[in-house]
Length: 463
Image (cartoon, rainbow, N blue to C red; front, side):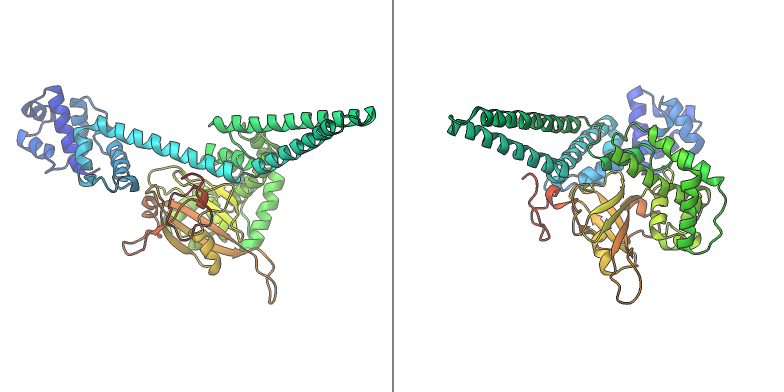
């Protein structure tokens, strides 16, 4: 936290309690002149002196040591630079003083902004689902088919009143059967929208699996513990190592994985359960080949360089990417998201990252380096991305061939992409310098507000 907030916070709190500068200085065993320098931000304060000041003023240490204020500072600075406020001339240079003098109002502004942001993201996610979810298209098509059949039979009965009793009964039976089917389709559609309204439930099998990994922060401790007891794979080449580890995971950890799947309320459908099993086997393979106890310090030492980590552990890039998403949620450790897409733009696998809006039911923004990477396969490409919300991320994408190899054989590429916030990128070898250009991107065309984008292929869902 900038020291200006500590000094200002001390001064405001002391005054609100009616304590003189001399009295507080005596309690802290320092001179009034030195306290005056601290309060006016000309001297820093830390360690035992900071703890004594917090006790004397009846504050928690994190209210003075900067942790809480620094998070608040980041939130307010993001608000100050939000695209929606660019014409208002917000005094961003005064954010720290605002927090120091009016911490309650500062938290209120941040809370309102966070609420608005969450509502916006929920609306965008819902727009993505309603626009691209195949369930809706299929269901509406089935409804229209049944309605057409009912209408056709009803028109025949109306236009030909003298048809035989046998034919009349046949058409009435058709109307009855189609009506029942239409009713069941309507019930399914109503249940779908009921789930939409329940924010703690998931709409599709892909969402269900995402919810499982989100609930665990992409970390399954029981699999990590079991993988430690399976020994070391001796092969030095990535492909044989992966294949042996997969056989080991399927043979030795299948019951454990099945128990995880059975015990997860997030997995409501058979499709979701099958997909979860496959992804948990992949997780187990990564845990066998790169135990977290050795992977985490090595990753930190190498600056989270995915190619260097692949060489160090004899892994393929996608396994390294998945492993990075499992790193512990600690302030000093960068947090990673992961996406894998094919040449058609379909996202095949995703590990979510807080703040990143990634479409589930359609291709992402064509400006993402996720798609550009296939123009330069086997090379890591970095992108500094700015979203319409003002959020900044660093994308790392690398395309790999999954088809046959050899002269004259077609190549089929998929792209692995790691995502991290720009703040977390500074903890890695991929930290963008000031000369690295910032590229304006969006989530996906149908949910992107950039109306003047020359790469738009679909009109926005709203507006």
